[in-house]
Image (cartoon, rainbow, N blue to C red):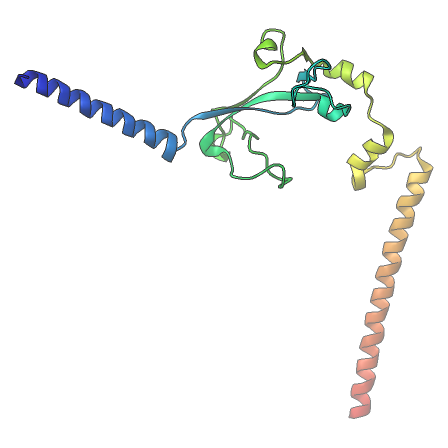
Amino acid sequence: MDKKSKILFGVMGILIIASIGATYWRIMIKKDYVIEASVDCDPYSEACFVWECDPESDVEGESCTGDPEEDIWYFKIARRNASRIPLCDPNTDENCQPFLCDDPSDAEAGGEEECEEELCTEENMEGYYATSCNDPVAFTEENPIEEEDAEEEIGEDVICEESDEECLLEEKFAGDEAVEDEAVCEGNECIEDVEVSEDETETE
């Protein structure tokens, strides 16, 4: 092997080692790559991918169980840079949202460019093994939210309307109780102050 061949192989070896090192640094150390995952989607407000079980299949994970929550799944595709994904488990931590993107337009607040969500369209439906696309308007009409569920979601933030006498009475009653408790508390403080002053007078 002549001198030129040795130099050529040496340069190629250095380039290969440098390429492997740079890839290892980017993937393993910096985690500079994008992860794609299927995440839950809200069918009331988003055009979700719809996956339905196969009633003729015996394969676990594809066959029907009889539970609508398991037999039908509304999902969307989320992509995020691996370095920004927190190390938490959504199954055990309710506050864990690993694919929740920051606002990409606000760089000062930590906006992310490599973070996006993809909803269902007729063009990309088959690529993600979805059986159909969800129409949020039609889904809301077919599955209206019950009043009890809506009240639970609103909770203490319910604002009474002038025509809702029952709600206004409950609000007034709650306000009267608060005022009464405050008055009693202030009265007790006054009584305690009087008793203390009387004890000091007797001691003198």
